[in-house]
Length: 150
Image 1 (cartoon, rainbow, N blue to C red):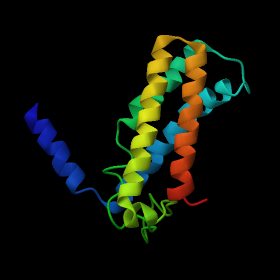
Image 2: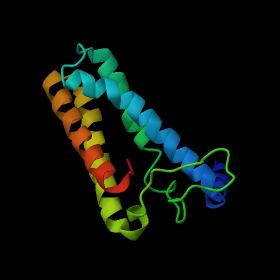
Image 3: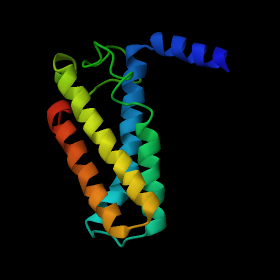
Image 4: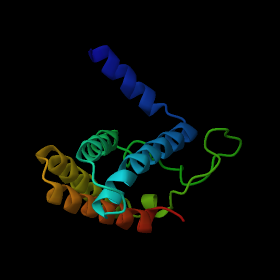
């Protein structure tokens, strides 16, 4: 078991910039696909389906735990990687690296909101679930406003 952890740590340390960009884009895309229905149900845009809401909310929590705001944002990945077939663009703003404390705080706020969403989903309380979804939406929007190019 320790050998596997060591190999993983080495692999992450040697991650190519384009692989980091691709990983974070994939994670964020999965987050969006999973959170979209949750937000739509919370806003009354689609009928509330508790089973679907819970499944998607827990998926958002699980994907967030991949730490998309940490290891997949190494220095220098605010620019496209010339010649890369995987990551020809990135919408990450340079403020991620010039204001790392602000980025970390925004990410922690989003992570806290996501944790509360999962907790509400596990409770089965529809009102709490919808309120928590609204807070996740606000936290994600705040981070994207500051650190994600349009």
